[in-house]
Length: 244
Image 1 (cartoon, rainbow, N blue to C red):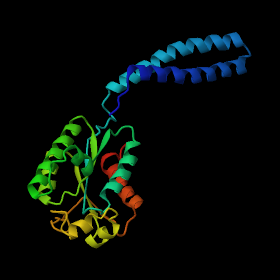
Image 2 (spheres, helix red, strand yellow):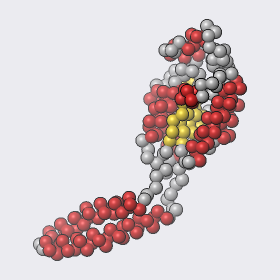
Image 3 (tube, rainbow, N blue to C red):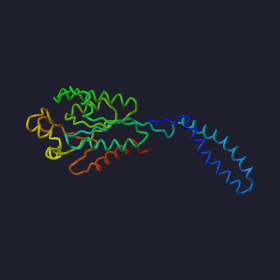
Image 4 (tube, one colour):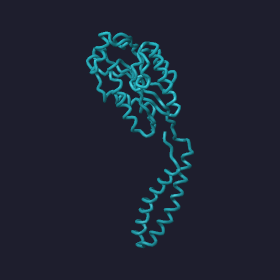
């Protein structure tokens, strides 16, 4: 979240008055034909109104009317491997990052697992893994930072756990059939899972609890990546920033 500093207020006052005073000087010269009068009036106005504008800006910073607190949120993308979670989440993050008043971070399952490679894929390990993620998000939100997160997060109980730990948890179900995900698999992970080389692989040797009532449902068999990202972006705008 950004705040107006005294220096910024002063620089705004100076730049505004420079152009405004220049306009006043030109008008006086046009009407009276006296350059000395125009310059004198312009200089007096410049000094006085810079101070007036500066004080006006600082006083308004103390007024609460019209201010809206930016509440941190978490966009939680869940779905089968290769359903499209990561690429859509990346697009949404890029869109939201352009808004200066939204401090935001991006967290993906792969990045966290690279930091904690010892974590397995059995049910208990997944629960522990996501609990750590929930703690991380909670810390970020305490500092008014929103989060775009993408995790398979196959179990309802673990998603609910993260929801209870965080604020404004938005569950986004990125839907795609196992058959479609297999077709999209450019790294052969599904093939390895089907051959038994990967244990506890979601959608093959491990269950996936589909969200019953997600805030947002993205059927990636019908929607493009850009369309899906736009849906999430518009949802965030309407829910959290409609008055901005």
